[in-house]
Length: 228
Image (cartoon, rainbow, N blue to C red):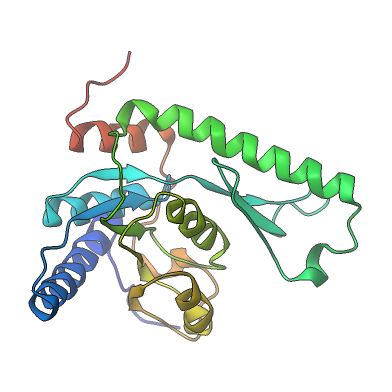
């Protein structure tokens, strides 16, 4: 067991991630001689408090990408895939879902996409209208456990033709690094422990982030009025 958590809370993790990203973006600009225009995309809800310090440090827009795990009523904890609000789908290894009837898979997929679209609508009042085409898209979450929602999110962003997509997170399992790297231009992960278990164990405080709190973060950062 580790004696102390890696991060005190999501804000602390976001500040550490922001510093790492600022360093890497500066190095990229120095190497290429080009100015990089970043835009931060958080995975709600837990990714938003991490993404705010990143966007603030980089002085760039903050938006969201919504992706939800696809699960079955029989085992709601087991993700058989992930889907974004826009409909990009990632299925898990075949052995986890191939025995499911097609109708059950489709039902589970529709249910997950409905949840994603509903959450996107909830957060819409706090999101700016950003076109990431040609920009550096930074996908941020508070941690990666399976990587399914994060990878689905990369597929959604690719539809909008950013210059590059970086997967950015404070902590992820070492065993996922090779797989995750297939779906992005760069991984920026602060800690990659072998003994993972769950994201929460690497934080001193890791409360659930409710919708109102997450929306307030977005509205405050983007200087958008709070909805009554």
